[in-house]
Every structure is written in structure tokens, then in C-alpha cells.
Amino acid sequence: MITGTIVKGIAGFYYVKAEDKIFECKARGKFRNVNLIPYIGDLVRIVPEENQVTGSIVEILPRKNLLIRPPVANIDQAIIVFAAKSPDPNLQLLDRFLVLVEEQNLDICICINKIDIDMEKDYEAIKDVYEKAGYKVIVTSTVSNTGIEEIKNELRNRTTVFAGPSGVGKSSLLNKVDPHLKLKTGDISQKVKRGKHTTRHVELLPFKEGGFVLDTPGFSSLSLENIAPNMLQNYFREFNTYRAYCKFSECSHIHEPQCMVKQKLDEGIIDKGRYERYKLIYNELESAKQRRW
Ligand SMILES: Nc1nc2c(ncn2[C@@H]2O[C@H](COP(=O)(O)OP(=O)(O)OP(=O)(O)O)[C@@H](O)[C@H]2O)c(=O)[nH]1
Ligand SMILES: [Zn+2]
Image (cartoon, rainbow, N blue to C red; front, side, top):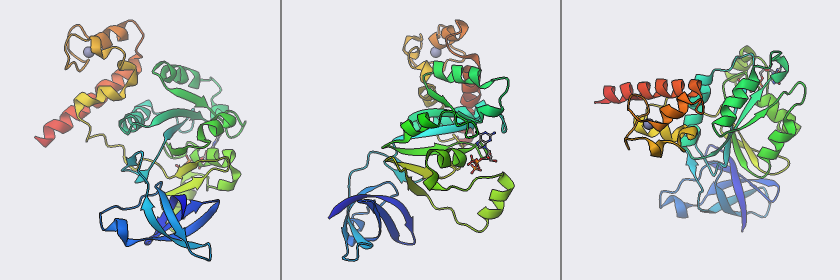
């Protein structure tokens, strides 16, 4: 019996990477009977057949976590990729990504790519805002090879989901850190054309220096509607230090008096843009909640 990681699943077969080989495996009935379904990312024990190509999964080892969208187990971290230019950074979208990932309790790293075409270096101000909020920010360019080593350091021996809007350079970055990955890159229209003919499976790609990356657009939807409004503050990590000092324990940090979050906003310690986006998402979640009643 050997231990490996499920890297993809197609039509009832699970592909398990173990001892530097990929085994095509069927799941044995034993754990199916107790309603255990293997997920991509699961660490499993397999019994290889003599041919060393096929085998059976006989046990699923305990999971560290399980993402629902995309459905993957044992993810260590998310790298959220944005472009400094082309497409211009949409911070409202970035904060939504962050909320979703914070909710999943993963380590987070923000990557600002394409800095080679940001002549005014506008990305520096964005980097500053998110570093102050408590995030690690890596700036990269696949053209000038900036930050590639830093991304490698993040990926090594961990399982990472790469997320971010279309066209920011996620595939280009992954190809830079490991040319073996050979991901398709290009302009969006080309990809859409190709997309019609290829089914995209969720797949963990083994990183040559150890670890896995998840090849997927990441989060297929950025609907936050399932988050209760009063939970949202937990996912703006720069509020964490202060919210215990608000007068009201149920403080939403919007209209209550003696709110420490608002005080820190006035003092310039909490970023105004981040706070405005918090308010926007909060109000949106409130209206979604009202609609449900
Ligand atoms: N100037 C510049 N262009 C880049 C950089 N990285 C990627 N690009 C270009 O940006 C375009 C999109 O890159 P992709 O790697 O396909 O982007 P993606 O994020 O994987 O896109 P989706 O698969 O649609 O989510 C391509 O034309 C790349 O050549 C960079 O650092 N600088
Ligand atoms: Zn408050």
C-alpha cells in the first residue's frame, strides 16, 4: 500500500500521484458505503496493481479542509492575482475575492502582475494599502521576470489555488514558475474559442519543486449572498484589532457611535477605500437578507 494525492477525476477514475507516478484508480466499495466521496486533493492510500499503472483507493486520510467551489480538499493557500494594468485593477472585485478566501480560512497572498506596463507605478499605492491591511503582496511581471522567485517560494511544497479575473496573467505566471506546466495563454477571444472544444476539469498540477497548483479560474462566482452581514467584518482583517473596542458588541461599524473602526478610519490607520468597499458589500448583504425574509 502506498500514499498519494488525487490530482484529477474523470468518469469514475481517480488519478493519484504517488512515488512520482500517476496511478489510474477506482475507489473500493468500503468507504463508499459510509458516504465518503474522494475529492481532488485528498490524500489517499492505494493498492497498485502489478502493472504499476492502475490501482484501487482503499482509504481516504483525514482532510485538513474542503473547498466547495472549486471542490478541492487540503488547500493550503490562495494566491489572488490582479494586473497593474490591462485589465485595470478592480479593487471592489479584489475585496470580494478576499472575503471569499478569508471565509475559507486559507492563507492568502496577493499578486499584482504586469507591472512592466504600469509606467506611473500606480501599483505601489495598491500594494501599500493591502500590506497595511495585513496581506503579503508580491509584484510580478512575466515580461521582465520580476517576482517569479518569490512566487516559487510561495508555491513550494504547498497546495495553492490561483484565482483572479480573466486576462491578468495567471497561466503566464504558472508557466514562468514551472515551464513543465505548459498552460494555455493568450487573449481572451482565442481562449473562448478553444474553450468550446475542451472540457475543463479541476486538476491539481504537480509543481516541479514540490507541491501542487490548482488550474482553474478559481472561484466561478463571486456571489457573497450566503454571508451574513454581521460576519462580513471578520473578513476585513484590519478591523480585527479594533472591533473589540467598539461600544456596541454588535457594532456594524457603519452608523453606531463610539466605533473604534471608524475612529481608526478617521486617524488614517484603516484605509478609506477598503472601508467604503466594506460598507458597499455590507449594504448589499443586508438587502439580500431582507429579500430572503
Ligand atoms: N505586459 C505583460 N503582459 C502579460 C504579463 N503576463 C501575462 N501577460 C499577457 O496577458 C494576457 C493574458 O495572460 P494569461 O496568462 O492568458 O491570463 P489568465 O489570467 O491566465 O487568463 P484566463 O485564463 O482568461 O483567466 C496574455 O496576452 C499574456 O501574454 C506581464 O507580466 N506583462
Ligand atoms: Zn464599530
